[in-house]
Image (cartoon, rainbow, N blue to C red; front, side, top):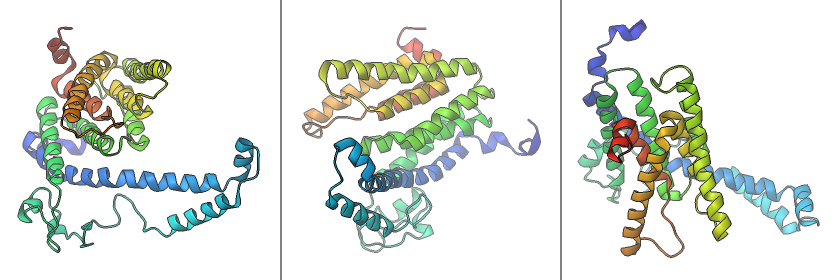
Length: 314
């Protein structure tokens, strides 16, 4: 180990306990990501709608006539409404209670501890704070600790923790909205290819990473095409293809089938349980992304040979 890392006690800094603490902090940030990224995307989509409504030439090409005046007026109204919104990003505005607008102070935003100290309620109005916030923080802590145990006190552990954090964020966003944002799936995909190219993924050369990305995308895309041909309906979204491509880039093409198998079985079980319990309304579906992400996490932390042994393919 060379450079500035040589003077640091990596065994301590990258131990499971230390990484669990880091996971609590990152988990708190992931709660913000999961809440705000879909809202930021929706703003962008409404902006696209306003721009499309204002495009008279496009309307003429598609519909063969001039755009009605009401559409032009609607586009202007949308643009004004969007321009009047408060700026929204991951860092600003500061977190507030959605019920009363109370600004969350720094000591009310300490991962896990603040929720326990406040007894899961807003300090100003007493509105309950969702249990999901501390659960996400603890879940991230558990994943980071597992990564430290799996990969050891090496800088690569931080890389794998980053992958785990992105997968958790994607799983939660997809569960909430049935959307897998490109601004998370595509960087994850390209980062996996880059990691393979520079040799950060021992045992996974660049060509195998590329094969994994292609196999991940095309396997689900072909299923999508077949399902649409047979039923006339779309059985999954393109975000699922990109997510599995990203997992293939990080884990190799051999991991694709085990991931899809685990995701399909668990997704089917959860869907049946939700339907039996009345939690799955008519016409709604269980998003596939959380289960793909979960399968990827299992392969990542258990190791591909172990997972293949579980299903008898070793």
